[in-house]
Each structure stands twice: as structure tokens, then as C-alpha cells.
Image (tube, rainbow, N blue to C red; front, side, top):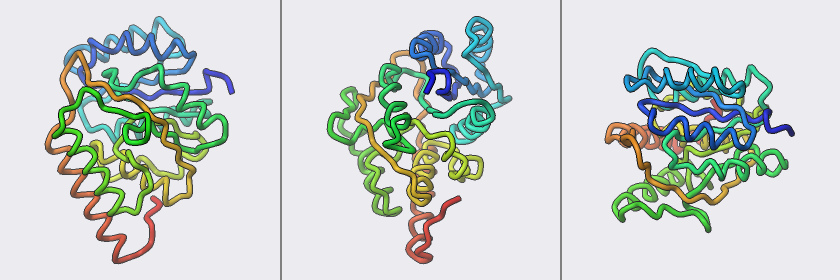
Length: 244
């Protein structure tokens, strides 16, 4: 598989301080990049256009306003699938996901071992060294709750650092997901499990951002918890796994 058959979808909102260095790091692998900017008031979208003019492997999608992580990925996936991508990755724009780890995720899919490779903080070798104890408890507790409610075997269902086999991604119906925030990752992991995708968790070290502000807000956490509870209760009564 050629490197340019990998497309990395990167949603942005006020990430001007991080974007140029991130694009350079991802391009070092020869992968294509699709930036999905939600009308960033700090000029991230303008910078993305400049980078696209300078690098033929960089593309940009502009959305007029901040509509959530899930819809941004959904539109990005749709455009990547319309191209020649054989592997489609997703990652944050703030360097919490190390671009140096991308080839390990891509290789897990390209080798045939997985249809979905998740950069996981909660398998041996994974870590969150910058996090205080209360944040670790919240994240690990949320993942445990999702595993129990949805009968998932994935240890890091909330992870947003992933590689998908392009031919299997349409089965997940990303554009029909109910979650707009980080619950989107749980929803896709659940749908991937229900559709029989082979899932591999690749250990990563997750670092906190240095520049810019975190997008993780209380409302995003509440949305994810509410949706996981709703899906889990529905699963208990129906017993049928929701595929799309």
C-alpha cells in the first residue's frame, strides 16, 4: 500500500498554534491530510488553506460554525472515501496524539490484522503521564461504564486516535451517529463491534496539549454518559446490537 493511500482526518477549532507543526509531522510519513475546520475565529482555517496551497497532499474542508466533533469527522470520512484512501485515520490537532505513532496504527490495518486500530491508553504500554488522578479516574471509569453497558471488549472506547480500513468504514454510518462530542468515538466502537469489524488496540502515550485550550467540556461528558446509558438500557431490553 502506498503512503498516499492513507488519509488522516483532523478536525480543528482554534488550533492555529499547533496546526503547521502537526501537518509537517504527518506529512513526514507521506500520508494525505484532510483538515476539517469549524470556522475557527483564530484564523486556523486561513492557515489550513495556506498549507494546502503549499502541500499537494493537504486538503481543507470549511464548515461555517462549530457543530461538534462527530459531524466534523463524518463529513471528513465522506470526502476521504470519495478519494483513493484505503486507510482513513483520525487524530486530534493538539499533539496529544503523537504523529510518530500513526504508522503503527496504519500498519495494523494495512497488514490485515485489523479493520479498526485504536490508539489505546488502557492496554499494556499505554499511558497518560500528564494527567492528575481525578482525570484518570473519570476517563477509566467512563470506559468501564461503556464496556459494561454496551458489552464492549475495547478498553479505550473513548479514544480519538484511530485507523479504519476504508472499505469497512461505510458500514458504521458515521453520518447517522447521535453523539456530537467524544461520545462519537464510543458510538463508532460499538457499531464496529456490532458489525463484526476486527478491532486491535495499539498502546500509545497520551500527552496533554501545550498550546491552546482543551475542547473537553462538562456538556460533552454528560452527553456521552447519557447516550451510553440510553443505548445500554435499550440493548438490555431489545438484545439486538444496533449496527447503524
